[in-house]
Image (cartoon, rainbow, N blue to C red):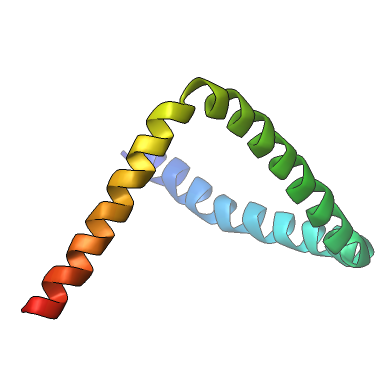
Length: 88
């Protein structure tokens, strides 16, 4: 019984120490690359935008007629909401 409690206590003490070590190690590397982070973010956002365009083209050509109908229905719903808000 004490052996199991000792193992649990050991790992409960070890986990925060591992976390502290990882954070301080990453902090050292983070300060080295700190000035490049905006450029890295820009490259990642550019890649995400390109992927979004590619997906949009594929789905846009496939579902363009349905998207136009859905857009029209949304506009009609907005108009009806404005009309009912003015009446009430």
